[in-house]
Length: 363
Image 1 (spheres, helix red, strand yellow):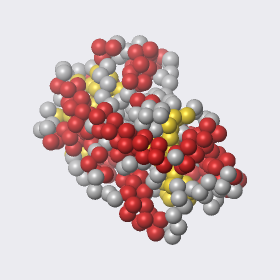
Image 2 (cartoon, rainbow, N blue to C red; image 1 turned 45 degrees about the vertical axis):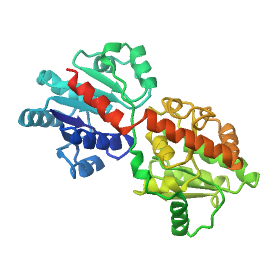
Image 3 (cartoon, rainbow, N blue to C red; image 1 turned 60 degrees about the vertical axis):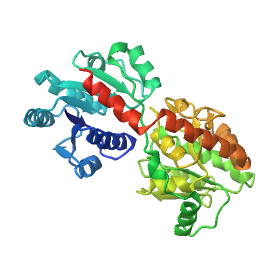
Image 4 (cartoon, helix red, strand yellow; image 1 turned 45 degrees about the horizontal axis):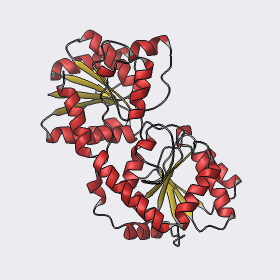
């Protein structure tokens, strides 16, 4: 079986990491993967190290050059299945399918953004040319059904992490090394996040939640890894709230497993989230989790069992949840251990790969 994975994102985020894990898992099962990504993207560079990768000239889902190149590639490499991993890729896949009806088209949906009721959007989602939709959470499945997609065309395959990569990390050593790198004394309680600085991730709420904790004299420090369009604005917000000594902006980091293993708690106050695989990584690393009750997050973070959840946009509620775990380390330990077992049982890498493979073989 030959599968072509298409994505159009310039950056490397959770979706790209899931494709990477899927490709490796499919390879172990004898399935040959190919990738089509924009030439200027991180995906084109990184996927090119492991599989045959087609460099697309544009990030547009309606670029005729990309459509022609994909059609030629499908023909030359005898591609059986196209797996579209983004909205733009969905558009490209439909165009290719119209020209090459023998290929099967699978569309992954990884976000819980509202599906607009526009004419072209309806044509995309209700097109008979899509053979199967693969949402990564039950939340997204419900959205697709509400939009009018037939339940028979939907197969939920939840995202996953490889927990084994965290087995070799000693959390105490990771913490010591990170603090030494930052020339920082141990603050007592390390809070962190490692997401892109976009509106979706709710960094403004996170930063605002730290103000009352600082005013109370709580011993903590917040480490924020990542870059993005709102990074400068968030740095200014921290300054306006006199939190410069309590927050360190680390920029883009490649050592996310070590970084997460050094934290006490991941705080993820997202405004929307299809699932949020960073949470799965943090849990596997042994972190406690405080997150918002949006999208697919409650499918991982069960309030009071595998973490704490709060309402979207409520920085005071978020502050109380963080304070609870900072003051009750036994609760933090119990939640973290429960969460680790829950993730291993419900978000395994094997289940993710086998679930996608079952979709590919179902045609």
